Length: 423
Image (cartoon, rainbow, N blue to C red; front, side):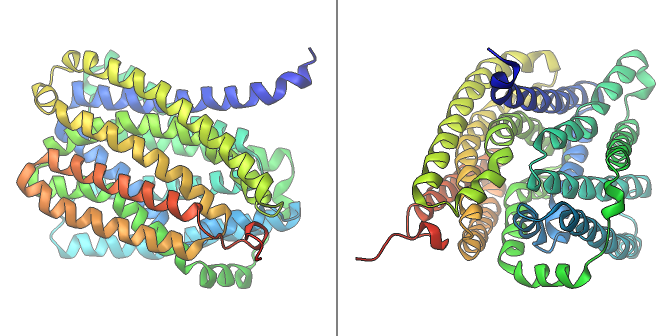
């Protein structure tokens, strides 16, 4: 059999390996932080991680998904200009937003230590532009290179931090962890710059502010979806920190990190790389689109079952070695979070289908309903049931999102090519 015939099987496996490497590194970092730094530091790390995910959605103005759909069919020159304009918007928003956040921290008497403010600000900026770059590469069908960059920025530095901490006990601090994070992000941007220089894509860079302004105006439903989605995913850990303290935030962060590995591998290795193809198939008619969708959902389901079985067997056996009795005392939280993750994977899968079908209004409406439900459930259940209440709120909300998105994808679609013929 020729090498070319092996290619369709090798690429997904390589991307899966890169994803596994990145997720394994973050997984080991969470274990290392819980064991050697403490659950309170893990709670702070979890809050910064949540902010690093929420900020790109909050400052993205909804234009990320809109840009991804646009550049999927653009010429090389137009796509380069569009990508440069998208990144320039991100940089401008951070140059305005971060100083305002510093002033707010100063006005409140610096409740957040300044070394964490500045280190966190650098991480938020670098993570945001890295997320933009990954989305742009995905839109152009460069999923392989996007996964390589993901591994560079997320999979390398945790091993360095962990190794240094194991060799030198004085390096077992939150500051060292944050410096390592910044170093990994900087290395990813050096790799991207070398890629642009090597292929001379920098010659195509241009700014198109009018095009971007049109995108922002057209992206209001997607912006609502992004804001609601970020709050839905990370509001719980901020409420836990407010009601229950940083140690229980660390407990929840660790269990959520385990589940997030499963979610990222199942979605990021199957559905996400195929999004440009799914978008294109939406214009080819219902039969071609549904065939691809069905195949992708089966693959996601198979990976979910395989990964979930491994996690449910392995994690409870691992927890005693962390020497944190609080984790074993809250083991029911782990079971609830894993059940919620299965629902979250289903919800995310059908969220990609809605995006391909241009069902932006439905996406926004469902996301807003989800974050409202999550907020109400967390505000009611966290004070009464503690961290178990946050996990239960996660499960209920994810189940509702999955059921609703599945139902919407099975009703009359917005995309003209998939609309059923009228009799």
